[in-house]
Image (cartoon, rainbow, N blue to C red):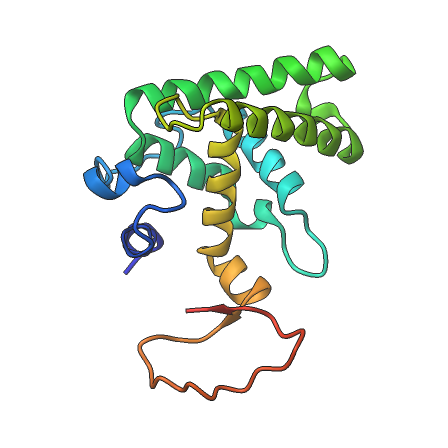
Length: 189
């Protein structure tokens, strides 16, 4: 089984809770992923850096090590509806424009502190947008999509599951008394 098949199955198992209920009902469009099919190489690089700002490298590898930009490209291309793809792509342009307006630089040229400041500002905007649109009928905010895909991609990648989490191979014997001490890493199955 390759990573793409595993991610598709994980998304089905999770019921689409992270990506959205619509994905659960419709599934992904195809499994014929080709790198850069929807996004350009520059946009994938931008997403790698945005993901690295959200989940930075510390004592464990960050989102960039999980090739999060390629993952997002594949997921947006294969699993998002056309209108959601347009929101995602326009959101990347909005993010770059906001960065240039605030720091007179593109996201890739900014310092880590500037990147964090910008993403915190955009995150607040996304939360305010969600509060205004509690009925669930509004289009999703692009930054929420980016954050969800970053988390899903990182924690379902080999790097995230084995370096950030404790990996326990499944199938295996269910052990309800598996040793756990306070402060241990969470489990990845």
